[in-house]
Image 1 (cartoon, rainbow, N blue to C red):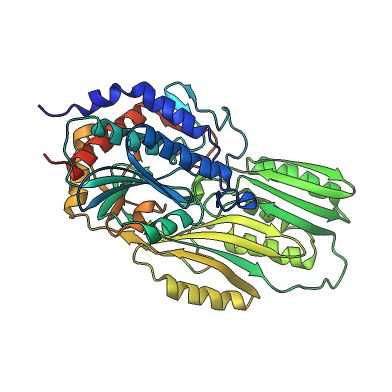
Image 2: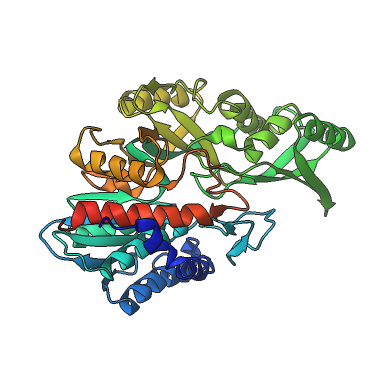
Length: 471
């Protein structure tokens, strides 16, 4: 008799929800200011990794901690490994939540928390799929290894370290994106545009921009921006114009005066950098407003660059980076970090480029253009595109499982996001966001539908069975 995967998962419903609630209560945000040898990415991130490995120990799996950067939870036997690549780090919560971001409130069929869909919910779904199989009377012809990372939202130091010390799975999937199946991921390159020239004002400016701060991560659209101005003239006019600007653009903001300095804040909408147009970049919006005023010459150059080269141009037309292909779609640009002070001034960009895009040539042209503006590219970090042939039997098996569990036709997708799948030679992203569901990763009030959490668990259980068990 065929295994009734949905029924098997339903038996564990309360355990699945409780495990997820416990995991999301760990605020596992990268904390590079408080690292130690034992907690190289900060204590909360280490706590989340240890929580997962302890759970695996308790349930009878083989576990291993690899330098407190990553670890694995394993079952089965055989020469080959089926990898299930997850992560337990999360992006900062941001402001404006309706529920506590690190509690795991269940309401209206949803579990709300930072990490609920990216990636703690899918991690628990995959883990429980492994537990269900381990407790069944099945035999394995592969080892099944859940690899738990802790730096997916930043520099991937976790998987880099892990694969320097551990085996590479022959096949694998990352439950960290969309169903049905993602076989192509854009290249992702982060870099900073530093303004190196310090100009001198020929005449006294109307006001001076002392500082500007927006954004914490390259891979998030900033939802908050703050500038401190030293006003000389037109302060009342500027504030009147600011109120009008907010109204015209359906934005919100605030301002106050302290010790003679004027502080202005603008609030946008956070979103994942894979599609910047899903958010409202608070930093670029505030710089766009400021560029119309008589600022000091350095601030004016900084603001005008933002306005003419970056603002409302997520496809990179103004920087000469635009590109697209049939496999993976448009190149996108997100200005995730903006910093301005007397000491330094830069824009931190996250560029996601198509599978067939010639990034080397594009960067050469960009560098030449920026040299003329005394702007230097620094701190570059490139992750090349990833693509697995859609006719591979591995992909066909995953598609079949998805179709059997959902009664929906499966299809191959490409994304601008980067998942751990690209760290494997033959890896794909497989769920856990279902078609038609809102993508709330990296946004306030992030959630996962309980129904989807259970459905994903069933899909992962059958997929692991089909790929790693003796039939």
